[in-house]
Amino acid sequence: MDIKTAYLPFSEINQQPKSWNDSALGLISFGAPVLSNTVEALEIPHLQLQAPVLDGADIAVEIWLSHQDLSQNKQFKSDKRGAIHYRFNDELLFGVICLPEEGSLQAATESAYRQIFALMEALDYPHVYRFWNYMADINGTNANINNHLERYREFNVGRKDAFLAYENGIGDQLPAACALGLADGPLTIAFLLGREAPIAIQNPRQINAFEYPDEYGPRTPSFSRATLLHTAQNSLLFISGTASIVGHLTLHVADVVAQTNETLVNLEAVITEANRVLGKPIFNLHDIYFRVYIRHATDLSAVQSEMQRYIGGAIKAVFIQADICRQELLLEIEATAGQILEASNAL
Ligand code: 3EB
Image 1 (tube, rainbow, N blue to C red):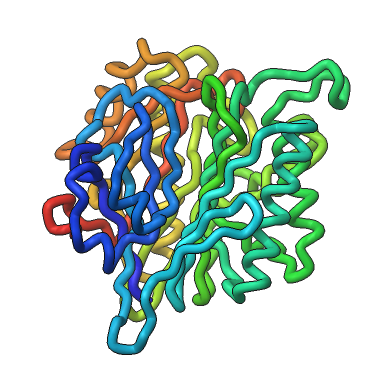
Image 2 (cartoon, rainbow, N blue to C red):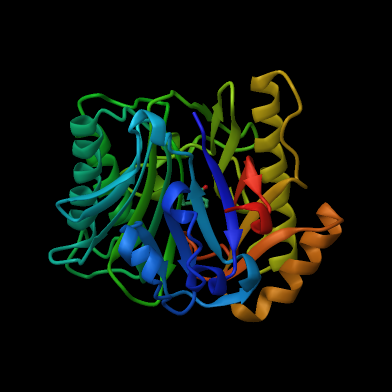
């Protein structure tokens, strides 16, 4: 299997690299909406999120790449099914689903996940490597729903109900995921599917999110701390949204520097756990791409200097303003380690 990721500036999307034709499965971008004739013409699924980019605009666009084998008539194809727009080859599928909240966020979430699982069954991609979830007003509440249940908890109910209904049952092998709040916009989810089984990785410092006590809502969050994809060709580690949580408790309320430090200790623990499972030290805090979501834009420099102090050396990170899934959390970091191309050799 061939799977890679690269991180580009917006300008490169608009330069319409011809080789995208042969390699691009999907895009995730933040900031102002970007129009690209290439993306449009090739029907490349594009998760465009209008969240402010606070720093790192030169690597703000994530592109998922694979190689198609033209000789064997295995080109990428793009298609739509319900609200899903997807692109695939015989090994991988990247999709985006965008659903307006017509009833409740819970109903939209359950519908979105049911559509994703139906696509997995119909096209026979049995494994999910990663989910990316974005919704408006993640910490808001709705008086009409479950007696002021927080919207992130509503999302967790819809997501878990869909997982429970999925006949092929993913069980404890849940994929990595993140869930962020934006100022507005529909529920938007991207996902990466494949045919080779990944390994779910947990964090020994944290209770598994899918086993959280019910003080965090009526249904637990359906995700693992990381997904490890290890094949003859690839070693990729998708690290979920990671935050200042130890056990199941939020630590360092109102202290952004201490939360950043705790988040990095958690990230390092997940990396160490993945290396332990692999039996070799493949992943580290340096050869990694970080996406840092910060609740208050004014915390940017404090987060950056703590990351620099903890990690040292050159750091590849983009900083986005977004709301985090627990009210007291000031930041969340997600990361991808492994087959990452430098933007200049990407295409
Ligand atoms: C999700 O898909 C992930 O409860 O430990 C981000 C950061 C998320 C921390 C946690 C959850 C947590 O729901 C959201």
